[in-house]
Length: 106
Image (cartoon, rainbow, N blue to C red):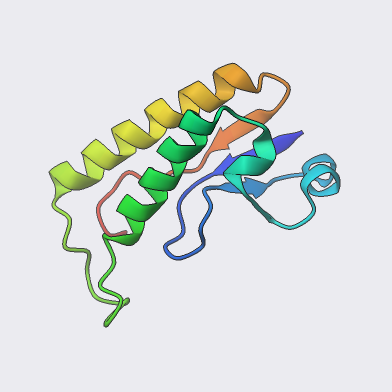
């Protein structure tokens, strides 16, 4: 079973089904962090990352360039990958595909 890992502003998730087995297990394409049966502190970390990523968007003009600097993007990517490493450690039965973009405002 495979899940993709990436952030899509406003989606409320960073996990996405990547194969039929994952789709059968989790239903929709988007997979809530809570559906992965992770510790509550890890779920809270994921929610904080989602909120942080959403704050990078100017919701009055979503197509505008992000207000984040390159350093902000790099810090977020590092924090997000640390989160993913914790998730992977707790769910070795799932293959997680890191699709996180690291370049600023690509």
